[in-house]
Length: 285
Image 1 (cartoon, one colour):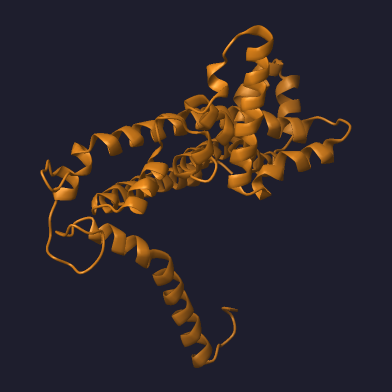
Image 2 (tube, one colour):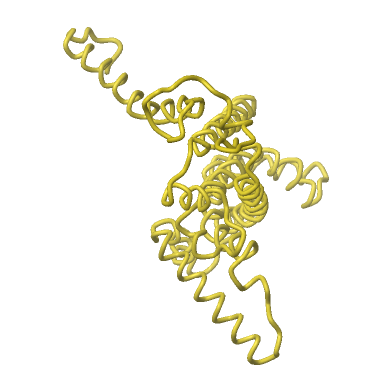
């Protein structure tokens, strides 16, 4: 749409209808899920049978709310621990990778860059199976050769963290690279001329400029880790993350407590997104 030109009325109406349809299609399922979290029914679906808070605070015997459900609370805790660990590891790896590809010149740089982004186009199921088989192979080799059992190479918390970080760190790297390419190198040269050492230039000039991208990449890493299912299902041990736990409940039949969980997740991620957006708007471009 060109604002300076007069558009025909049918075109304008069609444009408005498209915008409305798009956002209805995007948000209607989320709104329905959030509303059903307060439905006084034993099934996570319509029809509406009245308002209730039992799916948040109920303590049984029929209605156990999310805050009284030990299994769901435990899976939420596992997901938070995994997401925080993946966020920290992926942010460090992704930021270092961004400096590597933007600051240094070395042979096979393009090939290595292609290998870095390859996990993004590989299906999560294939990636999860590959990581599991690789870790098991290395673990068995170490055990056979040295008689040492390496716990983090078996299904469990640390294998989930390492497996998710293998592709989420690429997302962080791409976000940081996009901002690093706009960085004015003369700022570093000016700092060196004024007597700053390499660490001071990196800390006070470069990283401060990259801070919005690093924060945004960390937020993306946290959210991607928290909701990941395809890769995690092959790497998790006895303690399931929230997406896997929800899948098992939906498959076997569940109550609207899954809607209550969805409500909390939607609100939580929205708060994180708004906070991240506000931090980005305050940052100096």
